[in-house]
Length: 290
Image (cartoon, rainbow, N blue to C red; front, top):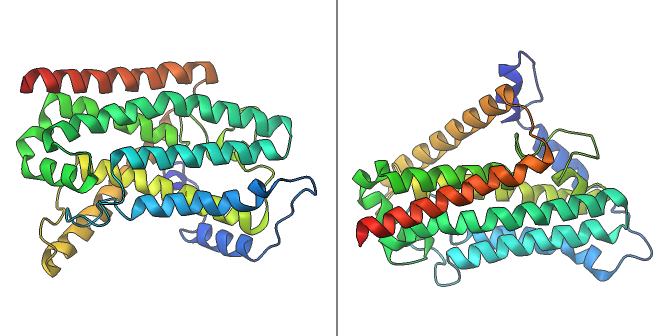
């Protein structure tokens, strides 16, 4: 996204693989912890990364065949995402700095508004699938392509996209490249983290961003996803998944190039709109099926 945004703004930008180099560099550095830090400060980065990887095990990527669907579903996905948020907030509070506490409070406040919208948006699809298993939801949506243009589906997709923008810390909710302590949210959470602990948290943030975009791609727009895991179908599914992620990256880059970051007190209204759209989607879908 950063490279596309730089090109749109007539800048060279960083190399595509620069983030991987940064993670490798951070992974080789020593983590500095306070003598008064609790054991949570030492294990929280590993728990955050573990929760992100765990959610990926049952998220449909190339096929609608269940992976570890028996281990988790939509409810467990939202629960683990909430665990990640709480651990990040507690880790930010460990240092006892003003900016860490401010970022933690903002992070939890926005998450409390985004989680209900996410649940309602995906539950709109779960009603038709009669299951909260993500693979079954993806298979049910893929089997009814005519329903993709229904009002309830489009409303749920819009609400989900707003939640993704908020949860990944993109403009207009947050600026991922900001260095202003009074406005940043995600960066404020990891402001006092260093070394390989910071590498783990940045890796987990990248996984969460990819996970949320994959949920949009394969739950709401499951074009090309493989119903049967044959080699040809998986190859087509891989191309479709990469293509959809590329389109999402272009949309985010264009949005950030033409939109300014909104003031903090307007963000609850923005997320409130997502909740209202998701509620309308769930209500309209229930009425049409009733």
